[in-house]
Image (cartoon, rainbow, N blue to C red):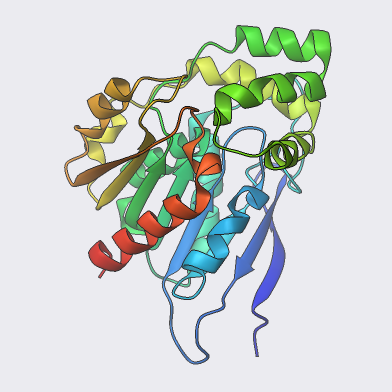
Length: 271
């Protein structure tokens, strides 16, 4: 009998390991599809905790800590990130934990880059795709890098929360997100933030063929909604839903709403 919740470490080709949590609270004897959740920068698989009550009754949930983050192997400050590398990591997760079938893939923030590129490059592995607070190009991280070096991660994290969540969260919830961010090794942050401005998957979204849901904030401060619609329109079979939010991290600001939208989309389009 398989436990409802398990944790594993997946060895990667370069000596690093990914921490992966697997939860299956579906009825005994059922054969649920797998939903793979990919978090963004400064987070871990814990960012999805409020999703489990919403999607866990109908889907087997796989939550990896992206390389360098959470309980996965930290990356050194001079590590050379690449989209090919992180997509290969996720491909290994799908092949190991996807139960031999295409998965329902969900990516938030910079995790959405990885999710969209995986869907474009390996369409046979992906049944549906959900993109939450996503983008196709990395932004300028010069200020963040300078603030982290000058003030430390704690001060930077606290100062960035207003932009992330606007007025959506209580002070206690914001503190939880700050504490989650502080679990990311400084060396991972340093190398990751140097990589971010080089990311550009604009041309890749044209190759996404699976049913795709894009969830965006209607008044996010980091990227205007018009930017989201410009690339969402290039995904052939896609739908856009906006939620009221004056921050840019809609997945963290309204997790249960995003989970419910994703659940209903997959139940409707994933058969």
